[in-house]
Length: 524
Image 1 (spheres, rainbow, N blue to C red):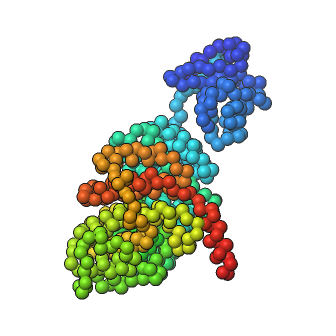
Image 2: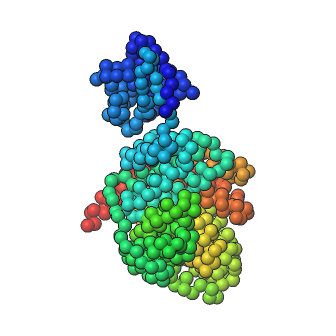
Image 3: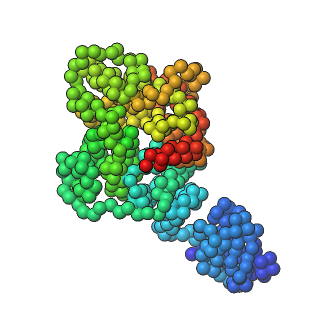
């Protein structure tokens, strides 16, 4: 113990409360009807000085800022959501002594992570950030908060991986940047934790099937195609038990994600980001992340079964066969084309041009679509349900393209699937662009300066919905990686990103939803 002489008992009895400064901290001493107590002088909620609080019932200290109440005798927080740091007190020779021994690191770490879980359950963003700051202050790895959140959320995300998990990898990239300030790093982790809590809200639990089976890739692919979650999860556990890593499983996971035009690109994005997260956070999160991913892939919409994209399977099967007509390899060849026509053009290119060359044109076309998106379509209230598109739909082509490029560099046999699915994105969004929009205003000029300023802006984005902020982050970082791999894309990509990052996005479509649901009910 490290006992420190604070003051005389007589002086404290006269004052009732006293502040003693020690090693940069303010220690509050309280002489109450039930004894003498010592605690930090700052309320754990928002730091209001507890010396300005009210003492009642002998040992209940109330912070008058937000009415949080602390039982100084037991340490319980009676009103509020966080514990108050208290210190042992003893009297010796009419002096008040306080034990300021730092807490045991292992015990402190456990207490902080328990606070993280409470913050997740309560959707308490401030507490999540506070507890993460405490991890850093105690010289622990602040990313432990993210690890705990992933494990906590695994059985609370009903349909598996969400944007919160997909975006976590990108926020961690920003956290790991040497140029990020301490506040920016903490903000990045706070975004991850708050989004996970938001996506898991509701309190439901959706346990994964039990069981383990020896890994066999062919059986896994079959189970995924048949939407057999118990078999797929059992095989996944068998793979991990045999020592396979998520990187080892990447080929099977990517093949599953690309077997269909699934989830409007989310499937492959989530595969890439989940594997990236396990590299960053380690084996402790491998099973929950991969179980979430399998569940998401099983529940994903198979949009290649819709009429608009139904040519996908046939075009993929016939990839590489010469076509009697082949337009020039240029973005202009795709302008105004629906998904089926775009796939036909890309399939024709596939017999004559390199994968990388086709990929460049498709990425540029996706960026051009984002730059020329028709904002009036996004806000109208008289459109059809099928035309409920918005800014976020336009970003998926770029985030899909970036995720796919990292995969096909190691699995080149997946190139045809990637290129055809990019054609689906370009063709689908082509119906919601304004080709005559004057885009000169969005030119970003110096690409490096634009990127640096835009990344700085992410840490104080000011958006009130996580689904918006995570798309800002994912799309910007995807665009940065795409430009690094192909600098010639910079002019179109930076202009498109500039427009998207500063777009005034409609948060809720109140009137449109009311009209569409009324019309739907009328048809029942």
